[in-house]
Image (cartoon, rainbow, N blue to C red; front, side):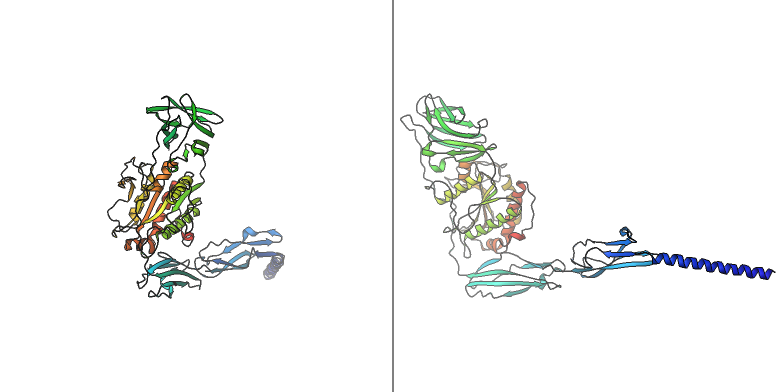
Amino acid sequence: MRSKNKVIIISLSVLGLIIIGCVYYFFFREKAIIHNVELSLNGEDTITIEVGTEYKDAGATLVIDTVDKTSDIKIDNSKLDTNVLGKYQIRYYIVLDKKEYSINRTILVVDTTNPEIKLNGNSKIIILKNEAYNEPGYSAIDNYDGDISDKVEVVSDLNTNKVGEYTITYNIADTSNNTFSIERIIKVTEPKKVVIVSNTEEKETKVEVKPIINNVNSVIKNRFTSNGFYIEGYKSGENTYKLILSGDEEYSFDLTSIGNNKYTGNIDLTNVNNGTYKLYIDNGERELLINKMPFIDKIKRAKVGNRLVTFNYENDEESFNIDDFNYNYDVLIDPGHGGNDPGASNEYIDEKEMNLKVSMYEKCRYESHGYKVYMTRTTDTYGSGMGDSSLSRLHKRAYEIGYQGVVSKVVYSNHHNAINNKSFNGYEILVPLSLTSGELSNELNIMNKFNSIYPNLDDHLRFYGRDYDTEKKYNMAVGNTYSFKDNYAINRIPLNLFNVKAVIYEGSYLTNIDDYNWYWNNGGWIKVSEAKIEAYINYLGGTYNSDNTSCLNF
């Protein structure tokens, strides 16, 4: 009996297990079969990226039985290294009912960026016939291989024994066979005549303005002030004078008699409205104010407060306009000399060529920072200048610098020195004698930068003004100011007629060959220009960017 029951129990147990197995098999097998899994890539199956760049994954899409399950996708990108060239797989997968569904994307990390060669020194070098050529050097950098300067191949047809232009070609290829080439031109020439340009200029003809009889008046001195202008002149008659500004409105200013029919006055334009005004002198009888001074002594226009004051002298009758002031330019650069005026010269090059190249480079650099630049010349000409036809062309150049300098925030002229004393080297900065250290703060900052750049500086004045009459130099780096007339037209005329600070930079001495080679052939001039550019951009409120690549071959 017990055996029979035991058999029944065992039979029932086996039957139950079979039933359970069948149910499990048919139920779950059927459930797995009915799933519809769609796993697809977003974007391309194969993506190529540049080595060293960031890879942004486009992802994949997962739909199970018409339900979006994209968030359930797992991504395996553990082997991807965008900093190393190669072929990589990114796997997108899910596991459903112990079954894995996956799809792959191929990532190709490649290097298609050309290496770059930077030449030390100038891209065009002048040497004399039979003179040895000294290679200034070069460097080659690749985005993937790094410094590959030792891989540069130099090809040259240079023959220093024969006059002509020759090309040195520098070639490089990286491990991905990306290539780059750059050239340096070597001009072999016969020696040029050395020209020393005097530091003095042809003096202006002095015209003394004397009292004029028959009740006619004349101005003998005028200059702009911080709030208007100063005037001094003669007027026959009584010793009580007024200056009348007559336009849509009329203003009267008391003048001070200083005897002998002579008067002075400081005319404050602060409360004078914009407009055009005729000027009258009045000591009981009103007469048009006459200014018979030479053109080179008549003030023209200046920024006065936040307005532009412009004087006019038709038939020597004095009038002026007052307008709201706006800057037209950020920087005015004057490349000295030009055209049939070579400036100084050494055996290799004319100063005018150096002045223009430096100035064009600086123009490019300012413009790369977003600033607007005015140039007195951009080609090998002297430029047109401005002002009366009686002026010398140097004075016309200076007049243009002043006229356009009024509406420019920074004004300077680029030059290079030459002197019989061949030991002189380094830079000079020439400034107006009357300016204070505060007014010259930018230039003093540049002087300090220069002192750290130049490899050799002999002991002579670097930062000075020069007296027109005695030609004596005065050190302007110590904070003193002087009332002497400035020797240099580029300093004098912009300041006297336009109240514009114009500074002259002498970059090197052409007559010192070591100085010339460091500065010109070996690229020291770029460091010098960058010191100016950085200082003035900081003054203009910008952010200096040292990347000058786009301006090296202007």
